[in-house]
Length: 490
Image (tube, rainbow, N blue to C red; front, side, top):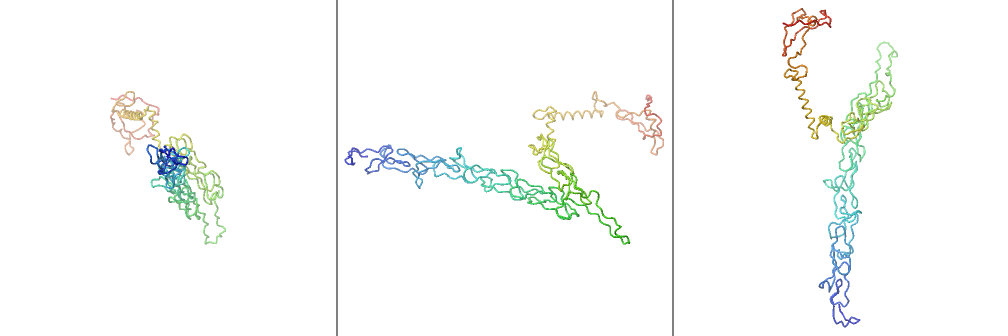
């Protein structure tokens, strides 16, 4: 820069270098100019005497005029004020929610793609520095927001083969269902049930009069003519020659047949008329039902099957027991709540399932379902035997019981003698016949004729065992309570 010049700039006697933050092109007659934002001075030495400027490179910025250098754009931010080629940025701006900028430097913020969510953002979702895929059972559209769990009856779509990064959901087709939200596939309806709509979270049992023999049915099949289906959830139909309409829920009894006319001169008016048994047309009692709700002609109402009930008089169908209840016999008028220690997870159940954690009646689920009575009894045995945490006490108790039983058996067999126990070695195990016995029972041979008593046989313990014939009442000449003294032996 020229110094000591006249007012018109002439007559300069010396020059001075432009200070830091200013510059002047070589040969220019103007004074030093301030370095603008987005640029840095070039030329000169020691920061002074700059002869030009250069724009900040792509991915860098300088937000002030004068001295200074370009700085790198941090991750989660984008440069602003740059030229079309991305150079000369004069500032930065944080990435908005739903966008992200990975790594320092670079270009603008990028929209979060579908199936992914932003990470590294602040509490308002801004400044995200990376993205991660939604996990299995989750999905998300492009932009801001978190991944959403696929609802029951729907499955995720558009993701990777491993189930990640799903972009949407689709409803389960008719004949299939998905019972829970999140991860899972559509399940075909089991045989005996159907799913008539899309997006279902459960299958429904086939009603009486219909059945489903295969899985994945969207509708149940009505029983054909000549067949019937008495209860819900059927997988097949039953033969019934008297069923004249499709969808029969009971097999009607054949109507009485009027006798054929006689070949004699007997008038047909003299033949007896077929009549319905007493009770025909009356309403079915509670616990039973029929298609019309009344007693069929020549038949009877159908009792409710196990797992079902009929609460009202004149019912036209039975109803399955709700979850948490059951009926284990025919003709139930009400279902019984599952007792404590059991649960019923499915409607139409005939027997509750064991469940040690079910502490109240009517349980519909069990945390430890499948625990049988034997497994539940182990802690009780361990406690009664004083078992420690390792469960060795009940083993000791069982071994002690087995030893006691073995000792008692050997004592009774005369192998060993245990003081204080009856029986044992040297004790007669067969009662010796008394004099009264000898008088009341007379020896006879095979033809019933009097015979001498059989020879005494000695047992291993040394007592006599006498063989006598069966009791003969005709020889009963001794009162039952009389016991003559037995003469000494030898």
